[in-house]
Amino acid sequence: MSLSETISVAQTPDRPIVLVGLMGVGKTTLGRRLAARFGLPFVDADHEIEEAAGLSIPEIFERFGESHFRDGERRVIARLIDGTPKVIATGGGAFIQEDTRKLILDKAIAIWLDADIETLVERVKRREGTRPLLNNRDERQALSELAAIRNPIYALAPIKIRSQTQPHDVTVDAIVKALVTWQ
Image (cartoon, rainbow, N blue to C red):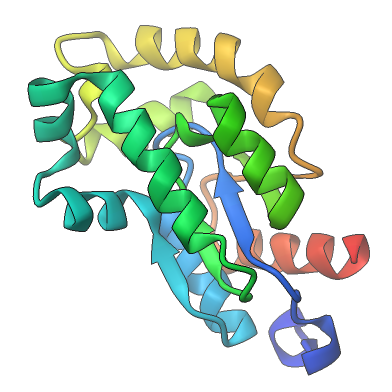
């Protein structure tokens, strides 16, 4: 029997699950599948930010800068973490911001999705032009620099899952197992 068949109502988390990690790690893709597995709503924080601003994330960065974006991101995530169970995919920098991180750690279950740099480079190249922190930069170098700064902060999440080049359901199974064990 697979994990997808063994989830009971008692095993469904009683608060939001927030996925954190570097860009390209699969927070949105895995988040959708995880939400479906638990029968919970899925929300992509970046999409919510774009809806609230009426602009794409690259446009927000270009017009107003990263600090303005981070402030809006914090407010959107605070609205999303309303106590009701759901799966939330955050942008790569959300958990790095102290106020946002504290909110996530206090009111949700944070899961760090981690992947090796080569996997991330392969994935972000598929969405060129949509990642402001990579504009006009070598992806490998930029992601390596971000990982060096951010990974120690992502490590504050109580659950860590390795996202690898494998079927998504394998990683979702690992997340479900970690959540059920953690609770």
